[in-house]
Length: 171
Image (cartoon, rainbow, N blue to C red; front, side, top):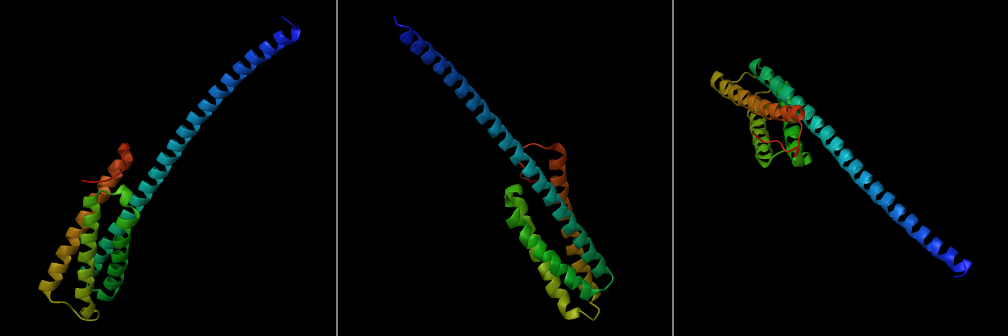
């Protein structure tokens, strides 16, 4: 066998070994990239769920404000707060649908309708007192809405504390 043939054979074997080593490194890099992608997705989901909890906390605070304003016959301000709350409750189910169960989305839309009804019912009384019976009914609806929002918020906060996947929230 000639020296050239021997060198060519060794080069081929060496090329094969380097090729296999390169393939192994590429495979490891691919796995690392997949893991990094999964970690990034989990981190993004955690941030979005935390943001969802913050949005619910703001909605709960607005609902508490609405209740307080109704109790103190401050209807002009109550109309403004009800309108802001209606906007938030309209937006959250659609923006955050991947993180809310369908029952929570439906409940939020029902709450939105209730707040819209409160707003419509107090609009004519912007500068006048409301009858005691009507006020009592509005306050009762507002209190129940507060409870419902806070239950969803509690479920979301529990999911944040417990962690896990999927991030969908339902009671």
